[in-house]
Length: 315
Image 1 (cartoon, rainbow, N blue to C red):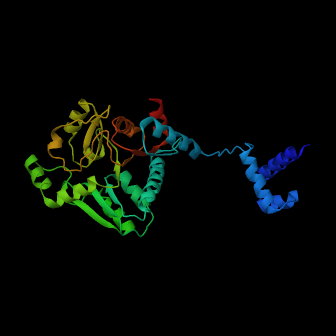
Image 2 (cartoon, rainbow, N blue to C red):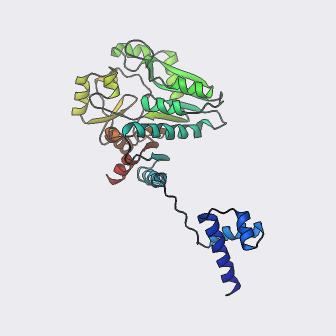
Image 3 (cartoon, helix red, strand yellow):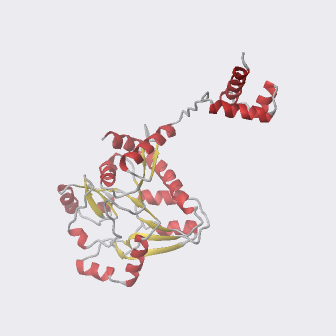
């Protein structure tokens, strides 16, 4: 056996002991009669020579692959996919909350002052509930949607305040309802200087976190009384499948305008966006809305579930 072959055999033994048997490098050195430094070099050289192929047998590895595929297919800057095979909707939503919080935390942990645009909805709220408390008073949270509910109370989906509290930063809210009572009423709201300053701040946010909503009978906008059953039916008849901040779009991701736009006060969103907007949504009922948002270029990043990701790649 040549010297090189002997070295390769030793490297293979060291690598097997380290990666398969779970032996420490100190124990490998003792077993092979080598110094710890030589044992460490053998393990490294085994990898360099292509002897080591690491396989992690866990659902998350499949999800990492799916995320990369979706980034490539839809031109996203970020994608995260959570395991969902065999899980019920509640479990999937919990996993989305944890993963979404991890994505948010990446931005929050920045030392440089950041402005975060925040949408609304149960999904976003559950993610912010899962966020750890961190001291970042230099950051700002800006609402992208009216903070006043139909009955004049604060909407229970007004999540930016909770996020600002978690990082001890400033909170800016839109002093208006999501939908004004009349077009004239909307004009009054949007002409207010506070409204204009807050929405301008939101438009210039470093990153926006926004939920993607389905549009069908019983959807959140309908259940909360913002749009009527008749309006849902009319929107569906015109091909509407999804919305973000009350901006409706069809299956092709094209903006669909209607009577509600004369009343809508939320921050402007556009298809083929150049802004950093991360969408959060999962489950079968939201699939059409997620697909349309991607197809229309409404978002630059996505956090979703495994079943949705598989369907997105196969469609």
